[in-house]
Length: 257
Image 1 (cartoon, rainbow, N blue to C red):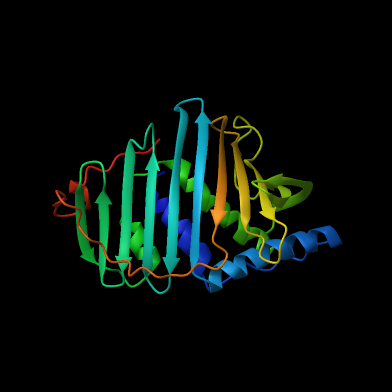
Image 2 (cartoon, rainbow, N blue to C red):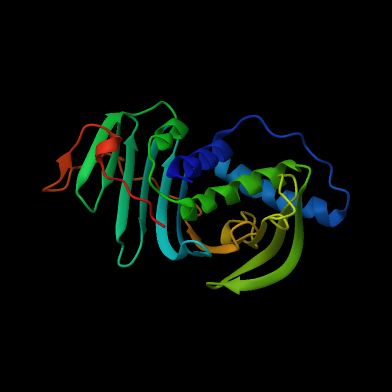
């Protein structure tokens, strides 16, 4: 899965105006759980977003992978996304949109491409391909948040206690999505374990995704700025020695897994 999948999931979740049909929780616990995820969704849709995430992942085919990303996003189409992975940051990319110019910079080969900024963040991020499914899991998680907030049929969250993560008290939920088709050979549906901070704004502390198909697992930990102060201009200044190229295809983008 390329970075465009990651991007479309994030922006669809953040800025979609239409919701899935509202399911009716059948128990007090289910209603309380839905309310927690709805508060998270409402916060992200109405505030500038800044968070850092680190991941470690494993599957039977590709082995181990580690990396990190820093997201800074503001409406209508301002963004700065820094992504790195591999030993000693083997792969590193920067995406910047100041609302007028959109830049993708491959920091390892010092090449960058520029184009007019799309009108929406979704369109901007669609232009970037090159990051494997490890980072896409972050945005798949946000898709799960949207489903739970909307009460989507087949997506079930169960409260599973709480624990301290990096000094924060976080509430643990186990999520099973049985709404997606899967074969008997693939085993049970994918599973999420999600920890949300116990506060009025239940920001993510940690997620663990377990894949039945690939026998893989990915763990992400998050550090959020609850009230980010957007002071930068989002303008890109070409580093000394960097080269501008014609088009994204000339950047030499590489999978981060």
